[in-house]
Length: 112
Image (spheres, helix red, strand yellow):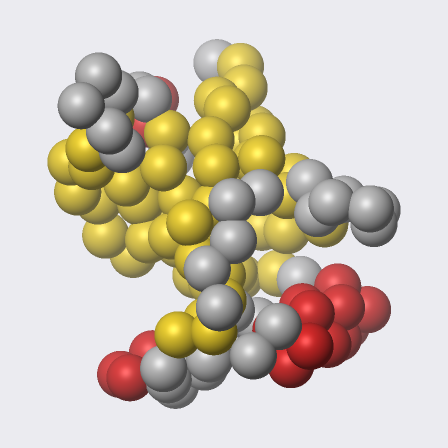
């Protein structure tokens, strides 16, 4: 499902793709909940060790993983179901290859 453009300027698709965020103290697992060619909303258990800028691997099903650099735009507490809560972070991609951006554009266009 593709979400409206709204104030972000880019269409977003609702997706639940695994994410591995790389930090100086190790890796944090997360999951996208929506994504565009310029950023994503990511749910993760404990983003307290995240720096403002980091690298992450987005595991797109049936495709090669995307490796992007991102920066945190905002954080929130997120409840995923009655038993699970954690944090949500809005990230903006600061570095993404042209091929990966095209892959996202095509994926979003095909899932309208």
